[in-house]
Amino acid sequence: MSEKKQASLLVQGYEVVIGFETHAQLATKSKIFSRAPTAFGAEPNTQACAVDLALPGTLPVMNREAVAHAIRLGLALGSHIAEQSVFARKNYFYPDLPKGYQISQFEIPVVQGGEVSFFLDDEKKTVRLVRAHLEEDAGKSLHEDFIGQSGIDLNRAGMPLLEIVTEPDIRSSAEAVAYAKELHKIVTWIGICDGNMQEGSFRCDANVSVRKPGAPLGTRREIKNLNSFKFMQQAIDYEVRWQIEQIEDGHAIQQATVLFDPDTGETRAMRTKEDAADYRYFPDPDLPPLVIARSWVDEVKAAMPELPRQMAERLVADYGLPEYDATTLTQSPAMAAYFETAAKASGQAKMASNWIMGEVSRRLNNEEKDIAQVPVSAETLAALLKRIADGTISNNAAKQVMDALWAGDGQDVDAVIEAKGLKQMNDSGALEKIIDEVMAANAPMVEQFRAGKDKAFNALVGLVMKASKGKANPQQANELLKQKLG
Image: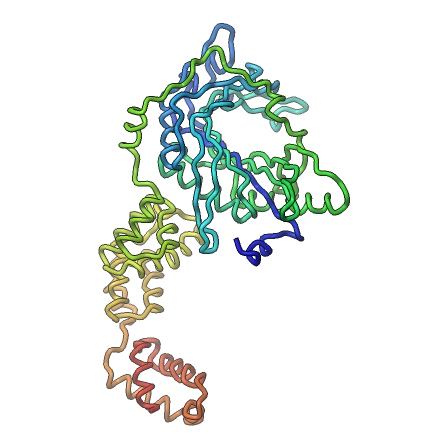
């Protein structure tokens, strides 16, 4: 990284260092070590069986589909999938953890290494992964409905999780959000997680520290359970400012777990942060080592969809798109399919890309809708792009057509163009007449142009377009005006 770029990332002279831990809840029908269902929203404690409740004599049994999901993630991120991994007991005591320990993986995780690449302001970034390990979720303490007491809901106990851990490679809150969005895209794309952040299916913890450039890593504080990209950025920004203020005031940062309060926009310490030694990890005697045959990995690989990065490379090769466009268009399978249909039907790949990333995305964002809810079909968009390409309508007129299509005023592009009178003027004789009239009415401006003032030309073009009620072909108007001005 250049010194200038590095300096621009500094906050008050400090370098921000962030590592991420993400819990992706796996999209299996039953829990990781029991047959209890995983559907969200059931009445408390109606989806917890004897194994989840840790009743005496119960034994965990590994969910095969959860392992297949872990293999899928490893393949998607270019990780090493361990042929043999081990489950451990992570000991801690909390009311919503009936066993008094959580079954997780420690020394030998199932997915090792790998990386996540993404774009931030047209610049490609890569975050290295340490690991992704399988584990069970804990239950949930309920404080709102019981005056002076807490309730325990064990529906979530035993839910299958994949904890994805990065190296401390992230250097800003914007980078952190871009990483989290890319990971969210990947886990939903390959179908291992529904990605619902409000329901807790995709929960992020950010380990944040600051240091002077070149100094050793600072003491980190972990912001737990960030369940929206907006709050993620706010929480990290606040935490960075807080840590810098503490250091500048001469205080040492204490390692801690903190929570973000969206109402105040502040983080607050929940407890001092435990290290691995505090959990007294040891191999779980009830679970044998998890052995994954190469043939199983090959079988999962054969059933994998085309991955976002592979599809992006193909869009660059097949349609001549810039890498940034291709990456943006592969935000979801639905968006990629919408682009490919529009590009093939119109023969205007770059124009299709521009419209989908611009007009279509802007309108969807304003209405808080997904590409799957787009009211204008890809085939209809293609018909619109053809009319821009063949000069029937201008780009500005096309936006008016899109307004009508979006509002449901018909789906026939030509009919909308006709009804709204948006066809460009292709009669050069009529256009010449308009130009003559504009030049006669604005003789001083004509003289300014001939005296070398280029701005006068743009002003004259604007007057021609206005006189034609926007129907003149801008390129044709430019050329004819230049000829007449000599």
